[in-house]
Structure formats: structure tokens, C-alpha cells
Picture: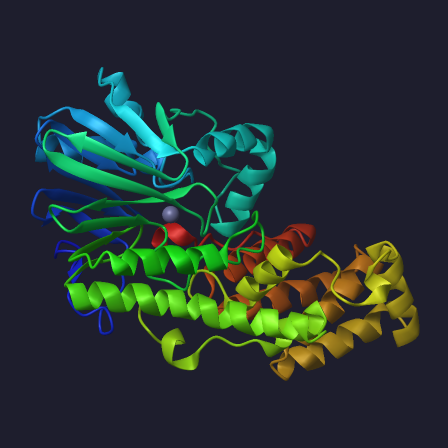
Length: 419
Ligand SMILES: [Zn+2]
């Protein structure tokens, strides 16, 4: 589909997901600005309701699109959660003198406070996850002016907006329902990918709460679904199917993990045994192109268990370099580890080759052949990884080896071009 066609589907089981489109009125009185993240402006009797102002670097584009759509003031802006791609695009509106209500679930405030405490950490995560040229993370906040804990009903003129708190990818999420129009704005509870519920670098996610929120939303029987990323869905049946199947996808993973935990299996065993529902996993809205089902399993283990993986040697382990030197000594030297790693790489066992490359480079960080193996292993895994989160970490690891070898880093890929 060309980028200027409506970002809309009535059959999500056959749709081609995408993340970008020229700004357009995607449903009656709803402007969509889709540039990785979806920003919506809804006409109300007393001005605009702006849902997810978006990323700071794209805020000028959002502002222009909204002002071409309508000259009405922003009555209310809402953050469906406090992530960098949703809650940091208000600045041009505020600088133009607008003073909207800024509505959010109350945990958004805690999130912003945490972001202030952990800027360096989050900026590096973002750099790695999205393959950015340098660390990047917001450090200016437009704080909510009206927060709620569980639910909020707002009247804008005679239009009723119902906000409901949820936990899913984050603990600070909410969704909006406009009953008179049968409009449901889900934030990142729907992203046209397998739920971002396992991110290896980020804080706890909430798969069961997420499933419950999806089921609650399905019960609203909305005619229109406006997601945080990806295509708008039109049609009650289509909306219900997408919501209930996404909930089911999560519940299938949670049920398997809990059953195995209760049966006494260790986290190591569980990680390798649990699988997503094969029929649901091939839905266009449940592809593992962003997160990865195994990462979700680890996140469920973290939610219900501790950090210990079940291997007693990992409880109070030796420093990684000492362990690597021990393995190298056992193998007969770093050269033997490298040769073995090359063999595994040729046999397309990048996972085993990665272990061997890590032992080799940790045993001798300046060993050129070990660094070359490390580079080649992670470029191999990068080329085969479907999940953007895995790609980001593999690309960063390959680049660490390249820099140590005095070579140019790989060009960035990154989320802003995925879709
Ligand atoms: Zn998002």
C-alpha cells in the first residue's frame, strides 16, 4: 500500500501492518498522524482531544498536521502511557500558548520521576535497542495536570470520554472509550506486533493484566479501534477478534509458564519449553518482529519468581573473565575456542558459536581472531533475528567487536525504519 492510503483495515487477519502514513482523517472527526507512533486528534464540541502527542523529534510535524486539520484549541491532551514515543510531543502546542488539560494515569508521574533518576541507563538502552548513533532519551517533561487511578469520565461539551487504567507493556497505561462514537483508543495495548511484553532491557511488564485489559476492551463492543502503532481497525467483529486473540496469545504463554513453575521446573527448563500458540502467532497483528515470545516467557518468570535461573553455579558465580579463562584452559587455549566457534558458525549454530566467542573474547579481550569470531557471530545472528529487540543487541555486540578491531561500525537499522 502506498504511504498516503488510509491506515485502516476491516480485515486484520489479512492486513499488511505498517507504521507510517501521510496525516489524514482516518475516521469521522479523527486525524491520524502515523510516524512510527500514532497520534490522534479527535474533534469535540469544545476543541480537540489530542491522544498521544508523540516523539519529541517529530512534534513539529504533529503540530503542523493538527493545525492543518483544525484551528480549534487543544482542549485535552492525553498520554496513554509515559513512553518516549507517546508523551513528549506537546512542546510546540505549549510554546504556541495553548494550555490543555494533560490527562494521564497517575503512574505516569512516577515514571517521569524514574526517568529523571535513570537518564544515562535509559539513553543507552534506547541507543542499543533502536541502533541510534548516540544515547538518546527525553529529559524535558510536560507533566500531567489531571491524573486518575482507576477510571475517569470526562465531558467535553456533550461528548463523554471514558478513561480506564490498565497495566500491560507498562504500569501507567490507560485506554479511552468514546461511547457516542464507538471509538476505542488503546494506546500500546495494541501495537500490531506480538505484545511488547518481554523487552530484555526494560522494567517489568504485566502479561495477565494486559490480557484482562484486552478482554475488557473487547466487551465494549467498539466499532473502531485506534492502536498506539499500526493500522486502525473498523468493524465490531474485526475489533473483537483482534482484541480477544491478542489476549489469548498472552494467556497461552502465562498458563504454560505457571503450570511448569508449579510443577517444579526451573526457569532454565521453562524458557526452552514454552511456545506461543502456533495459529495465533501467524496473525499479522501478532508477529514477533519487535519483541520475542521467549523474552515474554522470561518476563513472566520475573513477575512470579526471582532472578535465579535454577543453576546453582550461577548463584554466586565467578567473575566472567575468570570463568572464561577456565573454559579456555580446559579447551587447550583461546585458539581452540575460536576454531570450535568457527565450526559452529558454519553449522548455522549461532547460539553455540556466541557462547564460544564470549568465552574466547572474555578470556583474552585483545585476541584478534576471537574478536573476528565475535563480530561474525553477531552479524550472523543479526541477519537471522526477526525481533527488533534481538537485532539491536546483536548489532551493538558486533559493533563492539568491530571497534576493538579498528573497523567501522555497521550502519544503523532501527525501529524508525521497521514496519
Ligand atoms: Zn509505543
